[in-house]
Image (cartoon, rainbow, N blue to C red; front, side, top):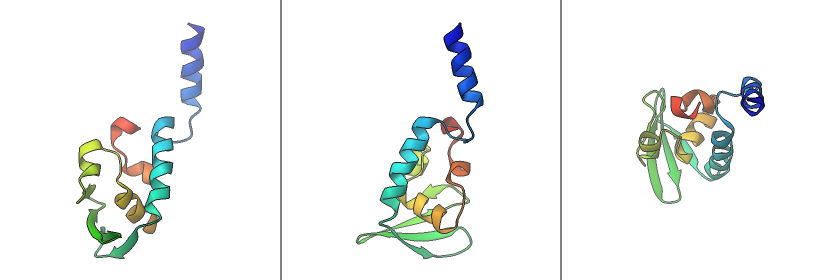
Length: 99
């Protein structure tokens, strides 16, 4: 019972919307997103170049043409690059499963 109480207290002390494992994944994706080139294409639309490939990111619809964001619910590196470019909080755009 004490273990459950300790876990509960630890969970209540989190200051982040996302859980620890998700935060670790987001940090790794942030590092990978630094190598992407971002082109603004509208209000919440971005074209993200990764090498010779271009991906369309729609922030308001939470979609990326690579499909990772829609399939897993966790951001793609292209989406993270666009969110960071717009200076938005990445955790607010995570699927509820990861919060």
